[in-house]
Length: 173
Picture 1: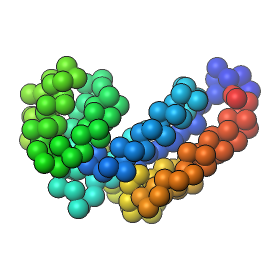
Picture 2: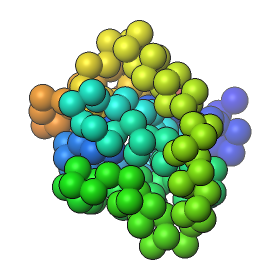
Picture 3: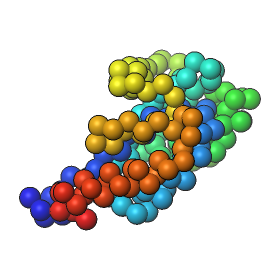
Picture 4: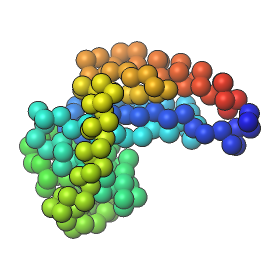
């Protein structure tokens, strides 16, 4: 199975919180990884709202609604770019971002009220706790947890080394 057309992408889970300025800074690494690996790397957003950030849980639910409407990553990036505004304004900011991206903001509002995405957010958070995630951003690749909550220095290089090894072993590099 060394045919790169059948090789599955390497999965990189990014445990993130949308009110976290460090997660906003981590997007630079995510963009660089995507540029380097393209569709050979599947970056999956995993929610880990922290109690210290009042609007993080609602933001995670809103991100799920954005994904359902087909604009998950653009929404996540826009919210992370406005962490200070999210802190100051909360849900009205989340709805404003949805409108700016051409998404159905009324559906966002309804989703935040009816809690349709609570299970997805709770499941991510529970899984994160189970594997030892304590802060954001935290990456998991090939079963290895890389904690960026204290420092992100060197994390992209470590992710690249693991991804390169996995892709070489799969014959997809």
